Length: 562
Ligand code: DGT
Ligand code: CA
Ligand code: CA
Ligand code: ZN
Image 1: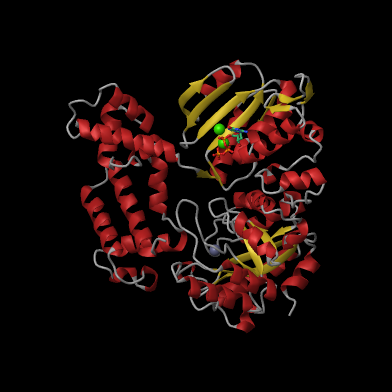
Image 2: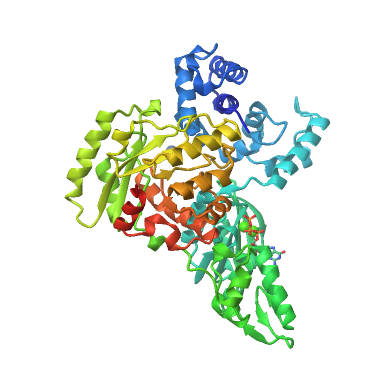
């Protein structure tokens, strides 16, 4: 598990590289690199240190580091990440290719992706260039292969945005995404899209602005790389086998294998074209429901198709009634511009009302997250404003809450009498991520035992591709949560996806209830709840497991039971 020091140092190092890649001043590049080194080498925990006391860290760098500790990135890094062409950034991910060489290849030879580099090496275009000997070329080719094999997966939010963009760009008779995206896995390897339409759809697809590279183009299947580095496979399928194709390409492979074996036992055959009997006569293919019904089972929701018992349950007609987006009556974790949100209280509440919620909790950060400069006065002033605003929303109950910080010893920001004034308190770990398993477990258990802590926010604190989960004895934490009636959050923010579905399943086994929250910092984030619903479904949750599907009276009675 990475130390905060190493992670902050890595971010500064990346920033230095991007800065250099953008032709930034060499003196500043060196000062970022020096600061990164000295932070990585600093013996104490960065989170318990005034960053400014570390040699080589001046005010400007200290601010960046503080922002990084707070949210896992900083503004200037985000900006540069957005500015450097994606393919060139992917070049720098090839082991043994630094930013200098990547920029050189881009500027001098127009090489803007690993595939383009491989082609250039194989075509002998690098021969004779300084710093690109035969040994280097061989290493680069190996590195490219390694990169493509590990095929960096992206989190669900990135893939969903892209899939929706692709679908909107193609005038097909029928079009939908399948694969791991439809199963709502937390990370996606590539996007699979099925369409019914003329073959010139392929032409149109290959010419879309989001396409950076056509990997393979055929009549039935075209694969492209996109501006986000992600591959998209578009398949054109016959209208009459739409259902069979959707079953096949939604997967998972394990689910497919299981139902295909069932078909084989009956002397039938199941393919992407349909379910056929022993004489190759079509039994079913038009809709997914037809295919499953012909196999003698219920239609299986895509989020369950992992061969985790769903086939047996569907054969018995005992699939659970899964929680769905429209079951959610509210959101228990949102921010405003009083702390690190970007929209005002008024705008966030109005957006919540637009979504048809019957309750909406405002949970800005509490004072111990020093960056946010929260005070009790500000929280109380917000509470008064919430009460005023309530008059404008007769159909939506406004809840005034806070997202507390769970300190290393499990305590939270405010004394009990202050906490008692909130309708809902989410408590989260925002620092000291690297405590030992024992300490971290005790920390969560203590938080659960606090009667004023209602919800544990983003429990593992992981950020996909950026920060590993904290280490804790989750059985012990969930036992404490069940015993104390503390709700575990499913933070829907797609790079968090926290709890992940395997831990949701474990927590449910212990009798824990969940809240599917958006953790919104801006209005569009409210819609992220659909990702949280995906996680919940993958853990087989029903509406009863999820407290924010409950009517507000039941919810508040549960939160404030003592
Ligand atoms: P990903 O892309 O790694 O996130 O995961 P998937 O599940 O989207 O996998 P992908 O893109 O390789 O294939 C899409 C679906 O196509 C997969 O879920 C099931 C089906 N499929 C692919 N290859 C096979 C196979 O060899 N056998 C069977 N039964 N199904 C397959
Ligand atoms: Ca896929
Ligand atoms: Ca695929
Ligand atoms: Zn938080």
